[in-house]
Image 1 (cartoon, helix red, strand yellow):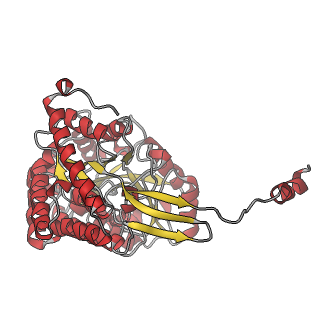
Image 2: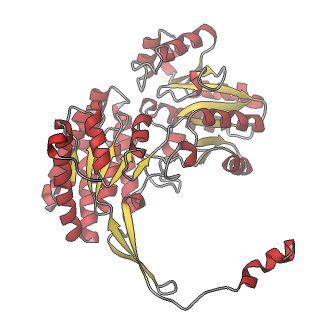
Image 3: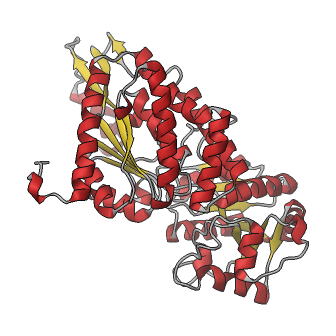
Length: 475
């Protein structure tokens, strides 16, 4: 893209361009003098900037204080677990120089950096997401320029200060990791989108759409609206425990938090008893109506209820629940699906919508309709002892992930007891309007150059290719 004349740029655009110039200089030197050891060391330095326990605790507290979202204890856990898991995933990855050399194909593959990564990060994870992006970028020879949400500016600046302190210990250029300074503006974010080499966007679907139309290669992720089926073969107590642990983690800030439960009628009452024991409280009648009005009545989600503790959320709604001292989240009945029924969408709060289903096939239909309304491509959960049902969901539901018998928000973005890559950004494929259908991970931050050499010819005859077809259909 041709650069605009300097006089035509706004002050905000000049700020971003200045940072980008510094990032390009730093990245070029980083790649020119690079090695696997240097890339690994820089990635570890950025990770330790957060994982050092004192800094993790400070940054988690600052994140909650400045954004008003989540809780400190769970953010400490998330920051540690997500970063440690990422380091496990990338530890043995080859991201510098020759990565494969195959005499049979005559192809040698060489890992190459993308350049400068532009990363737009959400207020829900203002520390874990920037570190995840920065570690992946540095591991692959890139620089990164972060654009935090307005509420995340202060904690992102503190985090980058700690990264630079770690870089000073290893002699790395601090310009490899920078941020767009406050105050945030759409002009700054747009300029970043237009001038970086690869754009990574997590959070606002408006930002994701802008990213894909920016002219820059973009990795944006779709909306979450996790729906979980509980069938008659499930371990109900275990399902209730896992759903509660997932739903309540960090006050439901995760895009992988359960937003809807679809429960088959045969076990509904028994399951609700288990949920009650685990801390779930079903609201019905006037209480449910009051809660819905409070959460959705202003035309958008009530900011006084999003990602707040249960007492704060209930107080904002003016609702009282039974046995409040042991309550952990609430359920409301699903009265329908679609734009006229906002309870069928993502709620980012300690509220889950409960839908009834006659049987598993009906549950599958309900879940599919919910995801088609919002959250297509992201993920669906299943609590069941029938693995064939998981396969059926994978073959028929518009989803990239079927999470089986797990606490959803811990499993979807990678877990130490499943095989998914650790990530805070889940691609939703074509269903969610995304360019990727897997968890964002280090391979997305690499280019690959292929050296292609001649090999002995491998040209089939026409008969070899069409023989079986002709036999079946005629020549």
